[in-house]
Length: 445
Image (cartoon, rainbow, N blue to C red):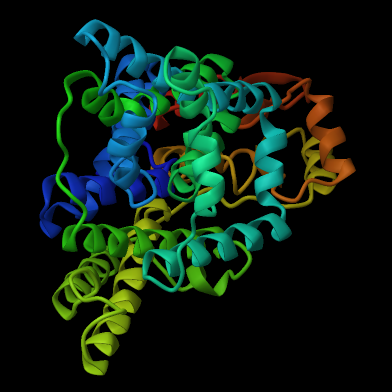
């Protein structure tokens, strides 16, 4: 039975990489784990279980702290704001807490802003120029992970930022604030995934509190090291493996953002066990060939070539795995018309019930409805007595905006069912299961 929620595939992909790092075994980076992370997160939000959802966001932040942009600076940063020299554990805890609050400061307003603006952020993410820019950014980040160049602020600027505020609470808060920006190359993928979902929900509580939980996760290791003077394992060969994992993740995300601009990437794919098997086989082959343990900077030319082939296999396998999660199941589905005006005229002239589905490529809940609800055979059969039209708002036009506004609706998803006399009888503004959709459709005369 297909999972109910698949809205956060990019973020779930990052979470799978985090699990890979935390558990230290390639076997945990499996498609079933990826599915579970995405499903648990969106199920939690859909059921109002914010505790579980925030817990998962916290884990993503905690895993991000293991990335090459963050981990090496933990011990040094803690020393700079004075936690190691504190006179007591209480003082060290206070300074470490203030530092973490500094990290959270830029994230929380950003989450609230996206929650308030809602679909504006989603529309922005649907702009081809923005999508290409994101893809280029992720490719550049991946190249940095593989050692092509160091993507860091100049050391002189880092030193100046580290001196902001000096030792003490003021210095700890200021250093936390600037550390959030210094870590941006590795926090970016998780932030984009989180903000994309927040934009779909129009939920300022999720926006502010969710980003705060992410910041807490990101700052946890800083807090532990600063409060208890715990020593962390030194960077070494294992950090190069970390970089390789995140490099592949970022290449997959680059393809993910380009998928709607290059339909050929996904049009030939079908969500079946063959696709999943190919994805897993490619990932396993990538690890075996050397995508993780070999290094572009060291070794023979043959080893570098193996590394390149492994990265290629890993990227292809990761992308196919994400698409397996997002593609609708095979079989019947409602056949949507595209011309709203023509479909509405026919419905009125024939006295036929009419259903209009507003959606967009960036709307996770819209995709869930299409994938898991409107593909249900019972819903498809009931839909045969409707004239059904889909309005795609991925590239919004003034006419489409006016049509959405005519329904007094700001965000997505939106499914409106009109009776045979033309009046609105049912409205859906969130993901619902096939049983509930079927019940609503049957009530429309």
